[in-house]
Length: 125
Image (cartoon, rainbow, N blue to C red; front, side, top):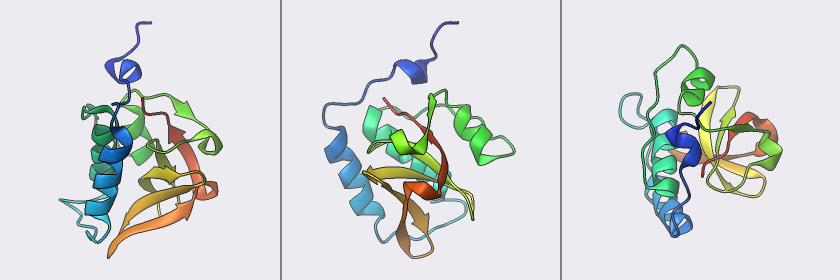
């Protein structure tokens, strides 16, 4: 099977600066169901890291929708900054910001949680 476009994307040389800029801009941006939700945050993070917004199918679950982008799954314990994660309770997508922690869109801006609360991660770049 030939690799998908998502699997061969590389991280930009300036990905850390671009991700930091996204996180700074999102720090106080509240959740909005149509404009700024966990999926739009995850897509923005992937774009910051790779320079490209992946094609994603809207499917019945966040897990299936995230899988449709074609990035490889990894155990959350192996996720590094810039990788995407899925947490539960409530189900939400986020981005790893540092070893052992991820950021998520919350009601008043970004919230943070340990990777131990995540069930799946996707390697980005």
